[in-house]
Amino acid sequence: MRTALAEAGAARAGGDVPVGAVLLSPDGTVLATAHNEREATGDPTAHAEVLAVRRAAERLGAWRLTGCTLVVTLEPCTMCAGALVQSRVDRVVYGARDDKAGAAGSLWDLVRDRRLNHRPEVIGGVLADDCAHLLTAFFRTR
Image 1 (cartoon, rainbow, N blue to C red):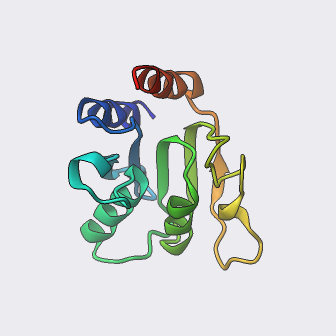
Image 2: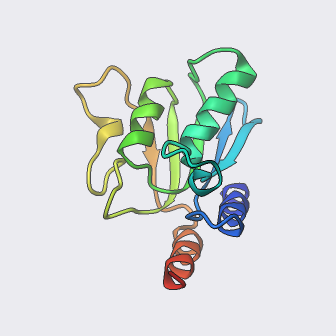
């Protein structure tokens, strides 16, 4: 999570919402890191989670990320949760809850919806205060 927090800091420095993500292989090797890049790229899908999934899949040469873990500073939204299900990520670890748009247990629980063919394990609240503080400080200046 500390690596994801560093990525979130890079997003903030670029004027974007400070969310960072790290995608780990089954053995814990870092496959990809990313942070929000919507402002930098003008791409509405450039969330940290989506970028990390894309980069990890490119590195592996495969779209299935079976056995992998995504660590992210903020609970994934519906778009990101859908990408995690589709990419077959086995575990999602997040820091701060997102009561306004979270789709991994707070507002929705897309990643564990029994109607879907893949349901990653979800672990929330890791360094939650650190993750939430970064977001609160960012939005306080807006």
